[in-house]
Image (tube, rainbow, N blue to C red):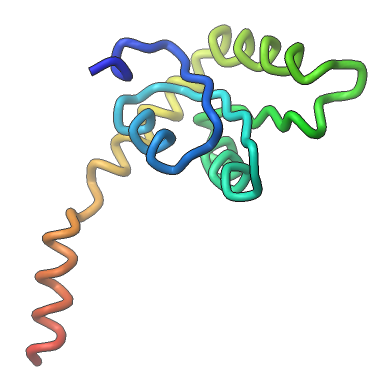
Length: 111
């Protein structure tokens, strides 16, 4: 209910959080707290739907908090992040449901 009302979400890089925001079309700033979160952040940011703000490696001359603020400003100031997020949401919505995948697997096994 809340996600679709957001212009930006800042989070830790959990897959469920990232997918909830993608489905809602919300661009993200991801501050991962572990390698798994970083992998999620790299995937979403690689598509152009997020920025990865690595708290362990902020840009030269910036504190981690400054990097987060700069990333938020960038996402909010550049409409390409929202556009890419909406494109990703459309791609995700077009994927088969788990039920459809299961039925396909059952049909293959039944052959």
